[in-house]
Image (tube, rainbow, N blue to C red):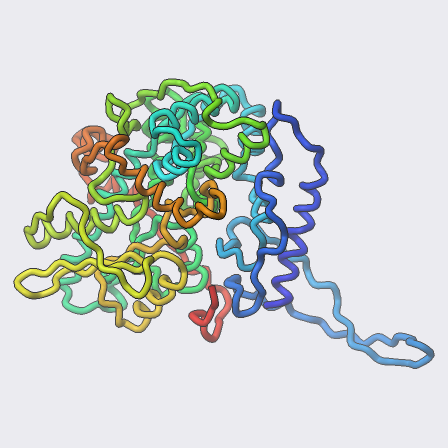
Amino acid sequence: ATRFFFVCRATLLSSLRAANSRKARGCGQLPSPTNMLSPGLDDFISPAAACTVKPMQIERIKRSHVLQLEGIDEKLTAMTPATAAKVTLNDCLACSGCITSAETVLVYQQSMEELQRARKASSTRHFVLSVSPAARAALSVHYGLGLKETFERISGLFKVELGVDTVLDCGLASDLCLVQMAAEFVERFQAHAQQGSPSEAASSTRLPILSSSCPGWICYAEKTQPHVLTHLSCVKSPQQIAGTLVKYVYGAMAGVPPDSVYHVTLMPCYDKKLEASRDDFFNGAVGEHGSRDVDCVLSSTEIATLLEECSTRLTEVTAIELDAQPPFSSLSDTGHAFCVTSPGASGGGAEYVFRRAAVELFGVQLPAHPLEWKAGRNKDLQELCLTVEGRVVLKFAKAYGFRNIQNIVRRVKNGTCAYHYVELMACPGGCANGGGQPKPPPLELSLRAGQVEARYVSAVETTLRQPEDNPQLQRLYAAGGFLEGGPLGERARGYLHTGYHDRNNVVVDNSLAIRW
Protein backbone atom coordinates (compact mmCIF):
# COMPACT_ATOMS: atom_id res chain seq x y z
CA ALA A 1 0.00 0.00 0.00
CA THR A 2 2.87 2.35 0.85
CA ARG A 3 4.60 1.74 -2.47
CA PHE A 4 1.40 2.31 -4.41
CA PHE A 5 0.71 5.46 -2.37
CA PHE A 6 4.00 7.08 -3.24
CA VAL A 7 3.88 6.04 -6.90
CA CYS A 8 0.49 7.75 -7.09
CA ARG A 9 1.75 10.86 -5.28
CA ALA A 10 4.83 11.09 -7.46
CA THR A 11 2.68 11.00 -10.59
CA LEU A 12 0.26 13.56 -9.23
CA LEU A 13 2.85 15.93 -7.80
CA SER A 14 4.80 15.88 -11.05
CA SER A 15 1.72 17.09 -12.90
CA LEU A 16 1.02 19.60 -10.17
CA ARG A 17 4.48 21.13 -10.48
CA ALA A 18 4.00 21.40 -14.24
CA ALA A 19 0.72 23.17 -13.68
CA ASN A 20 2.32 25.54 -11.16
CA SER A 21 4.96 26.54 -13.66
CA ARG A 22 2.41 28.29 -15.85
CA LYS A 23 2.46 32.04 -15.87
CA ALA A 24 -0.05 33.80 -13.66
CA ARG A 25 -3.14 35.09 -15.40
CA GLY A 26 -4.79 38.46 -15.00
CA CYS A 27 -8.50 39.11 -14.41
CA GLY A 28 -9.02 39.34 -18.14
CA GLN A 29 -8.44 35.60 -18.27
CA LEU A 30 -9.63 32.78 -16.08
CA PRO A 31 -7.23 31.77 -13.31
CA SER A 32 -5.53 28.43 -13.70
CA PRO A 33 -7.20 25.59 -11.83
CA THR A 34 -4.00 25.13 -9.82
CA ASN A 35 -4.63 28.44 -8.11
CA MET A 36 -8.29 27.70 -7.53
CA LEU A 37 -7.53 25.36 -4.62
CA SER A 38 -4.14 25.71 -2.99
CA PRO A 39 -4.49 25.50 0.80
CA GLY A 40 -1.28 23.49 1.06
CA LEU A 41 0.15 20.05 0.59
CA ASP A 42 -0.05 18.84 4.17
CA ASP A 43 -3.64 17.70 4.52
CA PHE A 44 -3.30 14.10 3.38
CA ILE A 45 -3.78 11.23 5.79
CA SER A 46 -1.28 8.43 6.17
CA PRO A 47 -1.38 5.47 3.78
CA ALA A 48 -1.99 1.80 4.64
CA ALA A 49 -5.12 1.19 6.73
CA ALA A 50 -6.21 4.84 6.59
CA CYS A 51 -6.07 4.90 2.80
CA THR A 52 -9.06 3.58 0.89
CA VAL A 53 -7.26 3.20 -2.42
CA LYS A 54 -6.77 -0.52 -2.86
CA PRO A 55 -3.10 -1.43 -3.43
CA MET A 56 -2.09 -3.05 -6.69
CA GLN A 57 0.83 -5.47 -6.32
CA ILE A 58 3.82 -4.71 -8.54
CA GLU A 59 5.79 -7.80 -9.55
CA ARG A 60 9.48 -7.55 -8.80
CA ILE A 61 12.12 -9.23 -10.94
CA LYS A 62 15.22 -10.10 -8.97
CA ARG A 63 18.63 -9.93 -10.59
CA SER A 64 22.00 -10.35 -9.03
CA HIS A 65 24.56 -7.54 -9.34
CA VAL A 66 28.00 -7.08 -7.86
CA LEU A 67 28.77 -3.63 -6.50
CA GLN A 68 32.06 -2.25 -5.12
CA LEU A 69 31.38 -0.43 -1.86
CA GLU A 70 34.31 0.96 0.15
CA GLY A 71 36.64 -1.71 -1.16
CA ILE A 72 34.32 -4.58 -0.23
CA ASP A 73 32.60 -6.82 -2.75
CA GLU A 74 28.93 -6.98 -1.84
CA LYS A 75 26.25 -8.90 -3.66
CA LEU A 76 23.00 -6.99 -3.56
CA THR A 77 19.60 -7.80 -4.99
CA ALA A 78 18.34 -5.09 -7.30
CA MET A 79 15.00 -4.57 -8.93
CA THR A 80 14.31 -3.59 -12.47
CA PRO A 81 12.42 -0.33 -12.76
CA ALA A 82 8.72 -0.92 -12.29
CA THR A 83 6.25 0.21 -14.88
CA ALA A 84 5.09 3.72 -14.07
CA ALA A 85 1.64 3.79 -12.52
CA LYS A 86 -0.99 5.82 -14.33
CA VAL A 87 -3.72 7.43 -12.25
CA THR A 88 -6.86 8.56 -14.04
CA LEU A 89 -10.05 10.18 -12.88
CA ASN A 90 -11.78 6.79 -12.77
CA ASP A 91 -9.20 5.48 -10.27
CA CYS A 92 -10.09 8.09 -7.65
CA LEU A 93 -12.10 6.95 -4.65
CA ALA A 94 -12.95 10.53 -3.62
CA CYS A 95 -11.65 9.93 -0.10
CA SER A 96 -8.73 12.40 0.14
CA GLY A 97 -6.76 9.47 1.48
CA CYS A 98 -3.76 9.64 -0.82
CA ILE A 99 -3.89 13.06 -2.44
CA THR A 100 -4.31 16.52 -0.98
CA SER A 101 -7.02 19.03 -1.68
CA ALA A 102 -4.53 21.07 -3.72
CA GLU A 103 -3.76 18.05 -5.88
CA THR A 104 -7.40 17.50 -6.79
CA VAL A 105 -6.97 20.31 -9.30
CA LEU A 106 -5.34 17.71 -11.51
CA VAL A 107 -8.84 16.76 -12.55
CA TYR A 108 -8.29 19.47 -15.13
CA GLN A 109 -10.88 18.05 -17.47
CA GLN A 110 -13.54 19.38 -15.11
CA SER A 111 -12.40 22.95 -14.55
CA MET A 112 -12.86 26.58 -15.51
CA GLU A 113 -9.82 26.32 -17.71
CA GLU A 114 -11.30 23.39 -19.62
CA LEU A 115 -14.54 25.31 -20.12
CA GLN A 116 -12.57 28.23 -21.51
CA ARG A 117 -10.61 25.95 -23.85
CA ALA A 118 -13.79 24.33 -25.13
CA ARG A 119 -15.40 27.74 -25.66
CA LYS A 120 -12.47 29.00 -27.70
CA ALA A 121 -12.13 25.78 -29.68
CA SER A 122 -15.66 25.81 -31.07
CA SER A 123 -17.93 28.55 -32.29
CA THR A 124 -20.68 26.14 -33.32
CA ARG A 125 -21.33 24.27 -30.07
CA HIS A 126 -24.17 25.46 -27.85
CA PHE A 127 -23.03 25.98 -24.24
CA VAL A 128 -25.58 25.33 -21.49
CA LEU A 129 -25.15 25.76 -17.73
CA SER A 130 -27.50 23.99 -15.31
CA VAL A 131 -27.41 25.14 -11.67
CA SER A 132 -27.91 22.89 -8.67
CA PRO A 133 -30.35 24.24 -6.02
CA ALA A 134 -27.83 23.37 -3.28
CA ALA A 135 -25.01 25.31 -4.97
CA ARG A 136 -27.33 28.25 -5.62
CA ALA A 137 -28.40 28.31 -1.95
CA ALA A 138 -24.77 28.20 -0.77
CA LEU A 139 -23.74 31.12 -3.00
CA SER A 140 -26.85 32.97 -1.87
CA VAL A 141 -25.78 32.66 1.77
CA HIS A 142 -22.11 33.34 1.01
CA TYR A 143 -22.85 36.66 -0.68
CA GLY A 144 -25.96 37.65 1.29
CA LEU A 145 -28.24 37.62 -1.77
CA GLY A 146 -31.72 36.24 -2.38
CA LEU A 147 -32.09 33.03 -4.36
CA LYS A 148 -33.54 34.73 -7.43
CA GLU A 149 -30.91 37.49 -7.45
CA THR A 150 -28.16 34.91 -6.97
CA PHE A 151 -29.43 32.97 -9.94
CA GLU A 152 -29.59 36.11 -12.09
CA ARG A 153 -26.03 37.12 -11.20
CA ILE A 154 -24.75 33.60 -11.87
CA SER A 155 -26.48 33.89 -15.23
CA GLY A 156 -24.75 37.22 -15.86
CA LEU A 157 -21.34 35.84 -14.90
CA PHE A 158 -21.55 32.84 -17.21
CA LYS A 159 -23.18 34.59 -20.13
CA VAL A 160 -21.13 37.79 -20.17
CA GLU A 161 -17.75 36.64 -18.86
CA LEU A 162 -17.63 32.96 -19.78
CA GLY A 163 -19.55 32.86 -23.05
CA VAL A 164 -22.30 30.43 -22.04
CA ASP A 165 -25.40 30.64 -24.23
CA THR A 166 -28.11 29.40 -21.87
CA VAL A 167 -28.42 29.13 -18.07
CA LEU A 168 -31.00 26.64 -16.81
CA ASP A 169 -32.17 25.28 -13.50
CA CYS A 170 -31.86 21.72 -12.13
CA GLY A 171 -35.21 21.82 -10.31
CA LEU A 172 -37.02 19.56 -12.77
CA ALA A 173 -34.17 17.05 -12.63
CA SER A 174 -34.48 16.95 -8.83
CA ASP A 175 -38.24 16.40 -9.09
CA LEU A 176 -37.77 13.59 -11.61
CA CYS A 177 -35.17 11.95 -9.36
CA LEU A 178 -37.56 12.01 -6.37
CA VAL A 179 -40.51 10.59 -8.33
CA GLN A 180 -38.35 7.85 -9.86
CA MET A 181 -36.88 6.89 -6.47
CA ALA A 182 -40.33 6.66 -4.88
CA ALA A 183 -41.67 4.49 -7.72
CA GLU A 184 -38.61 2.25 -7.56
CA PHE A 185 -38.96 1.77 -3.80
CA VAL A 186 -42.67 0.94 -3.92
CA GLU A 187 -42.07 -1.55 -6.74
CA ARG A 188 -39.19 -3.26 -4.95
CA PHE A 189 -40.97 -3.29 -1.56
CA GLN A 190 -43.98 -5.02 -3.09
CA ALA A 191 -41.80 -7.56 -4.93
CA HIS A 192 -39.86 -8.22 -1.73
CA ALA A 193 -43.09 -8.83 0.20
CA GLN A 194 -44.34 -11.29 -2.42
CA GLN A 195 -41.06 -13.16 -2.50
CA GLY A 196 -40.94 -13.62 1.26
CA SER A 197 -37.15 -13.84 1.66
CA PRO A 198 -34.33 -12.54 -0.51
CA SER A 199 -32.24 -14.90 -2.59
CA GLU A 200 -29.06 -14.53 -4.55
CA ALA A 201 -31.00 -14.66 -7.82
CA ALA A 202 -33.52 -12.01 -6.86
CA SER A 203 -31.35 -8.91 -6.59
CA SER A 204 -34.17 -6.71 -7.92
CA THR A 205 -36.21 -7.38 -4.77
CA ARG A 206 -33.52 -6.80 -2.15
CA LEU A 207 -33.99 -4.43 0.73
CA PRO A 208 -32.85 -2.06 1.99
CA ILE A 209 -32.53 0.24 -0.98
CA LEU A 210 -29.47 2.44 -0.58
CA SER A 211 -29.57 5.86 -2.24
CA SER A 212 -27.15 6.47 -5.09
CA SER A 213 -27.09 10.24 -5.65
CA CYS A 214 -23.79 10.77 -3.78
CA PRO A 215 -20.85 9.92 -6.08
CA GLY A 216 -18.38 9.72 -3.18
CA TRP A 217 -20.44 6.95 -1.63
CA ILE A 218 -20.82 5.20 -4.99
CA CYS A 219 -17.04 5.23 -5.56
CA TYR A 220 -16.55 3.68 -2.13
CA ALA A 221 -19.20 1.02 -2.69
CA GLU A 222 -17.93 -0.03 -6.12
CA LYS A 223 -14.28 -0.22 -5.12
CA THR A 224 -14.47 -1.66 -1.63
CA GLN A 225 -17.99 -2.97 -0.90
CA PRO A 226 -19.26 -4.79 -4.02
CA HIS A 227 -21.70 -6.85 -1.95
CA VAL A 228 -23.96 -3.80 -1.55
CA LEU A 229 -24.22 -2.99 -5.26
CA THR A 230 -27.48 -4.91 -5.68
CA HIS A 231 -28.99 -2.76 -2.93
CA LEU A 232 -28.22 0.54 -4.69
CA SER A 233 -31.00 2.59 -6.21
CA CYS A 234 -30.84 2.42 -10.01
CA VAL A 235 -32.05 6.01 -10.41
CA LYS A 236 -29.55 8.50 -11.79
CA SER A 237 -28.55 11.47 -9.66
CA PRO A 238 -30.19 14.86 -10.37
CA GLN A 239 -27.00 16.01 -12.12
CA GLN A 240 -27.08 13.15 -14.60
CA ILE A 241 -30.84 13.43 -15.10
CA ALA A 242 -30.24 17.11 -15.88
CA GLY A 243 -27.64 15.96 -18.41
CA THR A 244 -30.18 13.72 -20.11
CA LEU A 245 -32.75 16.52 -20.24
CA VAL A 246 -30.30 19.10 -21.56
CA LYS A 247 -28.81 16.87 -24.23
CA TYR A 248 -31.96 15.17 -25.51
CA VAL A 249 -34.89 17.42 -24.59
CA TYR A 250 -33.48 20.93 -24.62
CA GLY A 251 -31.22 20.06 -27.57
CA ALA A 252 -34.22 18.88 -29.59
CA MET A 253 -36.17 22.02 -28.67
CA ALA A 254 -33.26 24.24 -29.73
CA GLY A 255 -32.58 22.24 -32.90
CA VAL A 256 -29.09 21.27 -31.69
CA PRO A 257 -27.88 17.63 -31.79
CA PRO A 258 -26.68 16.19 -28.43
CA ASP A 259 -23.00 16.12 -29.43
CA SER A 260 -23.16 19.84 -30.28
CA VAL A 261 -24.48 20.77 -26.82
CA TYR A 262 -21.71 21.44 -24.28
CA HIS A 263 -23.31 20.93 -20.88
CA VAL A 264 -21.78 22.52 -17.77
CA THR A 265 -23.17 21.97 -14.26
CA LEU A 266 -22.69 24.04 -11.11
CA MET A 267 -22.60 21.67 -8.13
CA PRO A 268 -21.92 21.66 -4.37
CA CYS A 269 -19.50 18.74 -4.60
CA TYR A 270 -16.14 17.95 -6.23
CA ASP A 271 -17.12 14.28 -6.49
CA LYS A 272 -19.68 15.25 -9.11
CA LYS A 273 -16.71 15.65 -11.43
CA LEU A 274 -15.98 11.96 -10.92
CA GLU A 275 -19.60 11.07 -11.55
CA ALA A 276 -19.72 12.94 -14.84
CA SER A 277 -16.65 11.05 -16.06
CA ARG A 278 -18.26 7.60 -15.67
CA ASP A 279 -18.50 5.56 -18.85
CA ASP A 280 -22.14 4.82 -18.01
CA PHE A 281 -22.97 8.42 -18.87
CA PHE A 282 -21.29 8.44 -22.26
CA ASN A 283 -23.32 7.70 -25.38
CA GLY A 284 -20.97 6.55 -28.11
CA ALA A 285 -23.80 6.23 -30.62
CA VAL A 286 -24.35 10.00 -30.77
CA GLY A 287 -22.51 11.93 -33.47
CA GLU A 288 -19.02 11.16 -34.69
CA HIS A 289 -17.27 11.11 -31.33
CA GLY A 290 -20.13 10.38 -28.94
CA SER A 291 -21.50 12.60 -26.20
CA ARG A 292 -21.36 12.80 -22.41
CA ASP A 293 -24.47 13.75 -20.48
CA VAL A 294 -22.36 16.30 -18.58
CA ASP A 295 -19.23 17.69 -20.22
CA CYS A 296 -17.86 19.84 -17.39
CA VAL A 297 -18.63 20.15 -13.67
CA LEU A 298 -17.81 23.26 -11.66
CA SER A 299 -18.20 23.65 -7.91
CA SER A 300 -19.67 26.65 -6.13
CA THR A 301 -16.26 27.16 -4.49
CA GLU A 302 -14.65 27.54 -7.90
CA ILE A 303 -17.08 30.34 -8.71
CA ALA A 304 -16.25 32.14 -5.45
CA THR A 305 -12.52 31.67 -6.03
CA LEU A 306 -12.75 32.95 -9.60
CA LEU A 307 -14.44 36.11 -8.37
CA GLU A 308 -11.91 36.59 -5.57
CA GLU A 309 -8.97 36.30 -7.96
CA CYS A 310 -10.57 39.00 -10.08
CA SER A 311 -11.04 41.17 -6.95
CA THR A 312 -14.80 41.23 -7.27
CA ARG A 313 -17.89 39.67 -5.70
CA LEU A 314 -21.05 38.13 -7.04
CA THR A 315 -22.93 41.21 -5.82
CA GLU A 316 -20.99 43.29 -8.37
CA VAL A 317 -21.72 41.03 -11.35
CA THR A 318 -24.36 42.22 -13.79
CA ALA A 319 -27.65 40.39 -13.25
CA ILE A 320 -29.37 38.92 -16.30
CA GLU A 321 -32.96 37.70 -16.42
CA LEU A 322 -33.28 33.94 -16.26
CA ASP A 323 -33.89 31.85 -19.34
CA ALA A 324 -37.54 30.80 -19.30
CA GLN A 325 -37.06 27.45 -20.97
CA PRO A 326 -39.77 24.99 -19.96
CA PRO A 327 -39.47 22.24 -18.92
CA PHE A 328 -36.38 23.35 -17.01
CA SER A 329 -37.30 26.28 -14.79
CA SER A 330 -38.35 25.45 -11.23
CA LEU A 331 -38.95 29.07 -10.31
CA SER A 332 -42.42 30.49 -9.98
CA ASP A 333 -43.57 33.66 -11.72
CA THR A 334 -42.57 35.61 -8.60
CA GLY A 335 -39.09 34.15 -8.64
CA HIS A 336 -39.70 31.71 -5.80
CA ALA A 337 -37.98 28.35 -6.01
CA PHE A 338 -40.22 25.31 -5.64
CA CYS A 339 -39.20 22.74 -3.05
CA VAL A 340 -40.69 19.68 -1.39
CA THR A 341 -42.13 19.73 2.13
CA SER A 342 -39.02 18.26 3.71
CA PRO A 343 -36.33 20.84 4.48
CA GLY A 344 -32.87 20.91 3.09
CA ALA A 345 -30.68 19.96 0.17
CA SER A 346 -30.24 16.44 1.58
CA GLY A 347 -32.80 14.39 3.47
CA GLY A 348 -35.63 15.56 1.28
CA GLY A 349 -35.24 12.49 -0.90
CA ALA A 350 -35.65 10.01 1.95
CA GLU A 351 -38.62 11.87 3.37
CA TYR A 352 -40.37 12.15 0.02
CA VAL A 353 -39.93 8.42 -0.66
CA PHE A 354 -41.24 7.72 2.86
CA ARG A 355 -44.37 9.81 2.26
CA ARG A 356 -45.14 8.23 -1.11
CA ALA A 357 -44.56 4.73 0.28
CA ALA A 358 -46.86 5.42 3.23
CA VAL A 359 -49.67 6.43 0.86
CA GLU A 360 -49.20 3.84 -1.87
CA LEU A 361 -48.34 0.85 0.31
CA PHE A 362 -50.42 1.44 3.45
CA GLY A 363 -52.90 4.19 2.57
CA VAL A 364 -51.51 6.53 5.24
CA GLN A 365 -51.53 10.25 4.39
CA LEU A 366 -48.87 11.95 6.48
CA PRO A 367 -49.17 15.59 7.69
CA ALA A 368 -47.79 18.31 5.42
CA HIS A 369 -45.30 19.65 7.95
CA PRO A 370 -41.76 18.17 8.10
CA LEU A 371 -41.69 14.78 9.76
CA GLU A 372 -39.82 14.22 13.01
CA TRP A 373 -36.72 12.11 12.53
CA LYS A 374 -35.27 10.39 15.59
CA ALA A 375 -31.59 11.05 16.22
CA GLY A 376 -29.29 8.03 16.32
CA ARG A 377 -25.84 7.77 17.86
CA ASN A 378 -24.86 11.09 16.31
CA LYS A 379 -26.52 14.00 14.54
CA ASP A 380 -25.74 12.55 11.10
CA LEU A 381 -27.64 9.33 11.75
CA GLN A 382 -31.43 9.68 11.93
CA GLU A 383 -34.35 7.25 11.75
CA LEU A 384 -38.01 7.52 10.77
CA CYS A 385 -40.63 4.83 11.27
CA LEU A 386 -44.23 4.30 10.20
CA THR A 387 -46.36 2.29 12.60
CA VAL A 388 -49.66 0.76 11.52
CA GLU A 389 -51.83 -1.08 14.05
CA GLY A 390 -48.96 -1.24 16.50
CA ARG A 391 -46.50 -2.70 13.99
CA VAL A 392 -43.56 -0.93 12.34
CA VAL A 393 -44.16 -1.28 8.61
CA LEU A 394 -41.62 1.22 7.27
CA LYS A 395 -38.22 2.08 8.71
CA PHE A 396 -36.02 4.64 6.97
CA ALA A 397 -32.66 6.17 7.86
CA LYS A 398 -30.38 9.01 6.84
CA ALA A 399 -26.68 8.29 7.35
CA TYR A 400 -24.15 10.99 6.50
CA GLY A 401 -20.37 10.73 6.72
CA PHE A 402 -18.28 7.62 6.20
CA ARG A 403 -18.35 6.47 9.82
CA ASN A 404 -22.11 6.08 9.59
CA ILE A 405 -21.86 4.65 6.08
CA GLN A 406 -19.52 1.91 7.27
CA ASN A 407 -21.94 0.92 10.02
CA ILE A 408 -24.79 0.63 7.51
CA VAL A 409 -22.61 -1.35 5.08
CA ARG A 410 -21.59 -3.75 7.82
CA ARG A 411 -25.21 -4.41 8.74
CA VAL A 412 -26.20 -4.97 5.13
CA LYS A 413 -23.34 -7.42 4.68
CA ASN A 414 -24.28 -9.33 7.84
CA GLY A 415 -27.98 -9.34 7.00
CA THR A 416 -28.83 -7.38 10.16
CA CYS A 417 -29.93 -4.09 8.60
CA ALA A 418 -33.49 -3.42 9.75
CA TYR A 419 -34.07 -0.45 7.46
CA HIS A 420 -36.09 -0.54 4.27
CA TYR A 421 -34.43 2.55 2.76
CA VAL A 422 -31.26 4.45 3.67
CA GLU A 423 -30.15 7.80 2.27
CA LEU A 424 -26.35 7.84 2.30
CA MET A 425 -24.13 10.90 1.84
CA ALA A 426 -20.34 11.01 2.08
CA CYS A 427 -20.28 14.51 3.58
CA PRO A 428 -21.36 14.99 7.21
CA GLY A 429 -24.36 17.28 7.04
CA GLY A 430 -25.18 16.28 3.46
CA CYS A 431 -24.95 18.42 0.32
CA ALA A 432 -25.38 21.72 2.17
CA ASN A 433 -21.98 20.95 3.67
CA GLY A 434 -20.56 19.60 0.42
CA GLY A 435 -16.82 19.72 -0.13
CA GLY A 436 -17.30 22.06 -3.09
CA GLN A 437 -19.27 24.69 -1.17
CA PRO A 438 -17.68 28.07 -0.27
CA LYS A 439 -16.15 27.96 3.20
CA PRO A 440 -17.02 30.72 5.69
CA PRO A 441 -14.66 32.20 8.31
CA PRO A 442 -13.65 29.58 10.94
CA LEU A 443 -15.95 31.02 13.59
CA GLU A 444 -18.96 30.63 11.29
CA LEU A 445 -18.09 27.18 9.98
CA SER A 446 -20.39 25.25 12.30
CA LEU A 447 -23.34 27.47 11.37
CA ARG A 448 -22.95 27.56 7.60
CA ALA A 449 -24.61 24.24 6.72
CA GLY A 450 -27.67 25.20 8.76
CA GLN A 451 -27.82 28.58 7.06
CA VAL A 452 -27.72 26.97 3.61
CA GLU A 453 -30.45 24.51 4.62
CA ALA A 454 -32.60 27.37 5.92
CA ARG A 455 -32.13 29.40 2.75
CA TYR A 456 -32.99 26.37 0.68
CA VAL A 457 -36.52 26.29 2.14
CA SER A 458 -36.97 29.92 3.23
CA ALA A 459 -40.66 30.87 3.25
CA VAL A 460 -39.65 34.18 1.70
CA GLU A 461 -37.68 32.53 -1.11
CA THR A 462 -39.49 29.27 -1.81
CA THR A 463 -42.91 27.80 -2.56
CA LEU A 464 -43.81 24.31 -1.34
CA ARG A 465 -44.86 21.87 -4.03
CA GLN A 466 -44.72 18.10 -4.35
CA PRO A 467 -42.66 16.84 -7.32
CA GLU A 468 -45.58 14.94 -8.87
CA ASP A 469 -47.51 18.24 -9.01
CA ASN A 470 -44.89 19.80 -11.29
CA PRO A 471 -46.77 20.40 -14.59
CA GLN A 472 -43.53 20.21 -16.56
CA LEU A 473 -42.83 16.77 -15.11
CA GLN A 474 -46.38 15.68 -15.90
CA ARG A 475 -45.92 16.68 -19.55
CA LEU A 476 -42.74 14.59 -19.81
CA TYR A 477 -44.56 11.49 -18.52
CA ALA A 478 -47.71 12.09 -20.60
CA ALA A 479 -48.54 10.36 -23.88
CA GLY A 480 -46.19 11.64 -26.55
CA GLY A 481 -43.81 13.06 -23.94
CA PHE A 482 -40.10 12.32 -23.69
CA LEU A 483 -40.72 9.90 -20.80
CA GLU A 484 -44.03 8.52 -22.04
CA GLY A 485 -45.19 5.60 -19.90
CA GLY A 486 -44.55 7.09 -16.45
CA PRO A 487 -41.82 6.48 -13.86
CA LEU A 488 -41.79 2.70 -14.40
CA GLY A 489 -42.14 2.88 -18.18
CA GLU A 490 -39.53 1.67 -20.61
CA ARG A 491 -38.38 5.17 -21.61
CA ALA A 492 -37.97 6.35 -18.01
CA ARG A 493 -35.98 3.24 -17.14
CA GLY A 494 -33.83 3.67 -20.22
CA TYR A 495 -33.06 7.37 -19.78
CA LEU A 496 -33.18 7.85 -15.99
CA HIS A 497 -31.74 4.60 -14.64
CA THR A 498 -28.12 3.45 -14.50
CA GLY A 499 -26.01 0.54 -13.25
CA TYR A 500 -23.00 -0.07 -11.00
CA HIS A 501 -19.85 -2.14 -11.34
CA ASP A 502 -17.65 -4.25 -9.11
CA ARG A 503 -14.28 -2.50 -9.25
CA ASN A 504 -12.86 -4.51 -6.35
CA ASN A 505 -9.66 -5.76 -8.03
CA VAL A 506 -7.68 -6.86 -5.00
CA VAL A 507 -8.89 -8.85 -2.02
CA VAL A 508 -8.38 -7.07 1.28
CA ASP A 509 -8.64 -9.02 4.54
CA ASN A 510 -10.94 -6.54 6.26
CA SER A 511 -11.93 -3.47 4.28
CA LEU A 512 -14.34 -2.45 7.05
CA ALA A 513 -11.30 -1.73 9.22
CA ILE A 514 -10.46 1.29 7.08
CA ARG A 515 -10.23 4.39 9.25
CA TRP A 516 -11.88 7.66 8.18
